[in-house]
Image 1: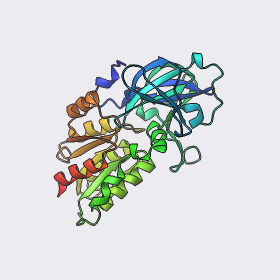
Image 2: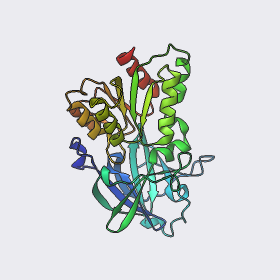
Image 3: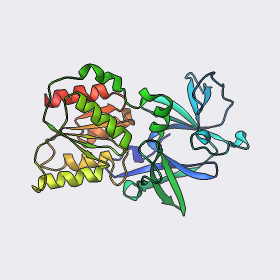
Length: 298
C-alpha cells in the first residue's frame, strides 16, 4: 500500500485506516498494512487459538487469519462474501485480520488521539490504544500487537532472551523510556532490570518524554539521562517526532536514542535514520535491545 505520510519525517501525524466490525468503527495505522483483499475461503487449522480463523495463501506465503469479531466479541458476519481481509506486517510477522468492511483512510495528528482510561482499556486485558473522532464517528484504534501476542506471547517481546542475562553487575546509567502500552512498558522495564539497568524513567508517550527532557535542559530534572528508548506509535506525540526534537536540540542531541518498535521495516528504518536515530530495533528482539544498550552504556 503506497502512502505519502510514510516518507515524511517527524510530522507527528499518521494515516489511519477506518474499518467496521460488528457495526462499530475501528482503526489501524496504515504503516502496519501490506494490502487489503476481498475475503477468501479460509482453511481451518485444528487445535489453533479460538481467535484464529485459519490460514490462506494469497501468493506464495501462508498467512494466519485472525477473526476480529471473535476478538472483540461481536456478532459474526451475516455475509462473508462482502467482508475484507487486512493483511498486516509488524513484529516481523504477516497476519491478516478479518473485518466486515473498509471505510477509508484518514490523516490525523497523534495530538488528536485520546488515550482511553482504565474504565475502557485496562493494562491487563485492554486492546484499545487510542480513540479519535472523525466525521462524528468515534474510531477506536486497536492494539494489534496485543491481539497477536495474546495468541502467541513470544511475538510481543522475547523475554526468554533475558534469562541468561540475570545476575549481571548493576549499572546506574539513567534510561528514559517512551512507550504507551502499560503491558509492554512493564515487560521492557522488567527485562532491563534483570539485565542490570534499574535506573529507568517511564513515560507513557512522546510528549511526556519530551516534557521531561525539557525539564532536564532547564535544570528542573537531573541532567543524567544517558539513553532514550522510544516506541513509534504513541498518542499526543509519536516516537519519530520525539526523535526529531531530541536530535535537533543542541543540548540533547548527543544522548543516544533507540527506536524500539513493531513497525521497523526498510521504509520506516530510512525515516528513522533521516531523523537521527542511533539504533532501530524491531520490538520482539528484547535481547538485541539490551545488547545495544550494553554497547552504549557499559
